[in-house]
Length: 197
Image (cartoon, rainbow, N blue to C red; front, side):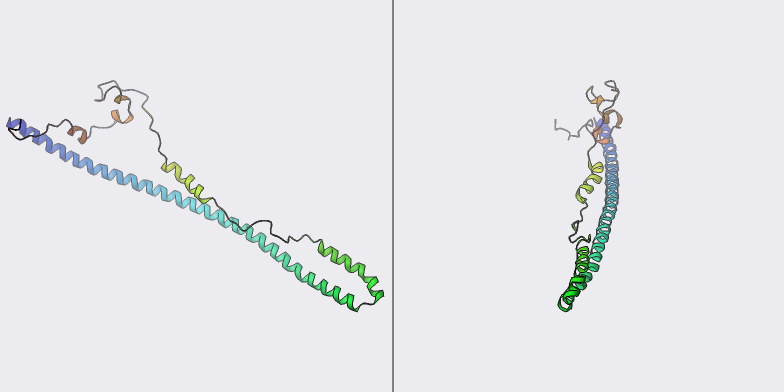
């Protein structure tokens, strides 16, 4: 009848209005979730970046100090060697046989002492600086991006108490979710033109 059709149309209008409101709420919720996760990811990236940069700076400072110390030590040793080589050349060319025999052993002792100085001639470490940054970024972002398995409810709602079947009543979302406009639309009668039956 016309009255039933009017009621069905009115119900349909209410349902579509509720559906539009629910659609807007879902959109805002999804945007909020995206922004929240994005902020958390950026914060994790910033903290990991700061930690990695500090580690790289620490490695640089340590190796820079070590290499500079070794360079300074070798730089101080080089003129000493040059002076003693020049001294040996001058002594061997100008000293008499008696002077040579008198001073040669002392000169050889000094040369031997210089040769046994503990100066590293090669660096003990390479110049490589490694931070394993890819693994660190992956480790810091994994908790935010991993999918957490949902825990099922320990208490099963009695069938029929929440509008769910026996299998559905054990699902986490079935008993706790309010009835949405989309689910209500499934029960709304479809409108057909008179005479279409």
